[in-house]
Image (cartoon, rainbow, N blue to C red; front, side, top):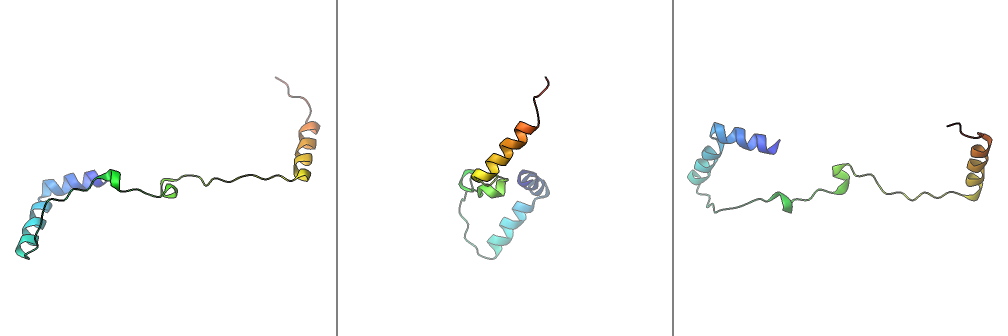
Length: 76
């Protein structure tokens, strides 16, 4: 999306107009580079799943074991 906007604005001459307007206002500009590797998003912004440790009480483990045992053998 950012690249598409940059290309579209370049074709429309937006960058040249912005530079000209800034120079007319007396803004001193120098070379500035923005590198995407220096912009980091939080892991949650990228959709990372929160790490959760599962704790099972002895009672729930016994219940699960009983359910598995009661389900009978698997047929292949």
